[in-house]
Image 1 (tube, rainbow, N blue to C red):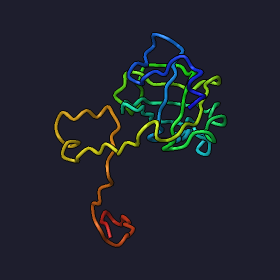
Image 2: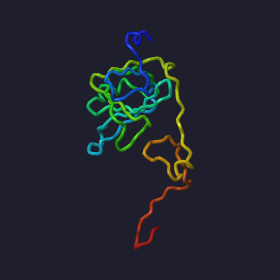
Image 3: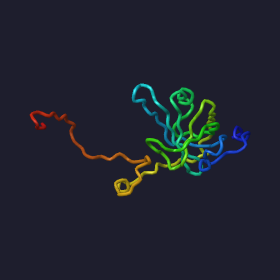
Image 4: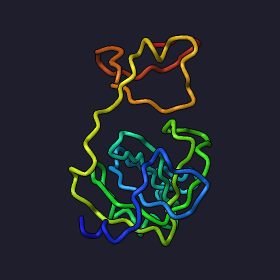
Length: 167
């Protein structure tokens, strides 16, 4: 904890905006995944994170391809970190992972320090009932946690189309 005492202020995730550049946050990595580059299937396009502070507020974090090498061996799913010197951008795009209006982008100068796990309590997944997902008016702009749905049990078989009929 002494590493944190040298920093002026720890900010809550809910306060993160475009208004300033020097944010210091303490967060747990709730989810971590790599986005595949469609043109180069063996090389990740980015490393994506869902981060949560001790108040339970979540924000999306993104690490672009050029910086994955710097952070992938330092950041782990479920671990807690002090994160500073990152940029802030509007939370938009093809998929939106949190309801926070902003997301954070790791930069070359972003610093992360591993902290004791008890500083940010673990958070269970926020499962959404299927009835809500299929309901009219469900907001499909955001990713949600679901449990896989079993649609059937049987023997896998290959179907071939022959003379307009399936076998």
